[in-house]
Length: 207
Ligand SMILES: [Ca+2]
Ligand SMILES: [Ca+2]
Image (cartoon, rainbow, N blue to C red):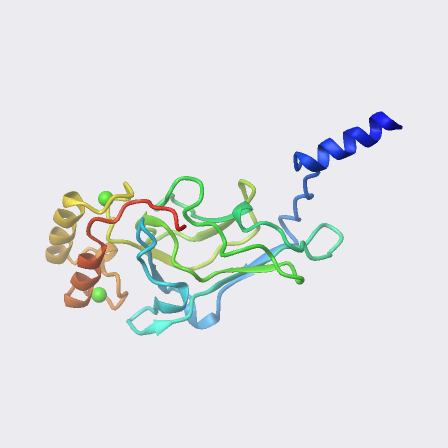
């Protein structure tokens, strides 16, 4: 018995008593209907916009907050589940995430098993033509979202430098949609402003 007690104490101390993984099919995620097709601006240093300030197709600001609800296989909510076990990816890999933590959920789940993506994420690249996946401990929860990410880090190497400025200049001429940060169908002055704000950004975790 003493040995068992010791084992339990050690297991608790080392955090080895892991929470079970929520159900990948019962768990779900959504965005507001008005945010379908919206574009979220991201930068590697977190200098992009919050999801509440996404650009609707055709232009205009829309709230594209992603909400996820984690449920266990018995239907009960996964409460206080760590946000660092949840992150965003896109189906074609166009969203480049700062290693490991760039697109984590904003925080742990609440008493309904819910948490959100609302704060600016640490990412780059372009996911036009792709769909968003919500990853749970390395595998996707069933479903996808029709939401895109655009970034001044046009080539997705998580550093906004001269290469991206050259790519943006070319996109201005060719009207390449990845540089249409404002999602209004044209690469023009408002996109240049966003591009300029992003110059120099690289992956830096928040304090
Ligand atoms: Ca880059
Ligand atoms: Ca634009």
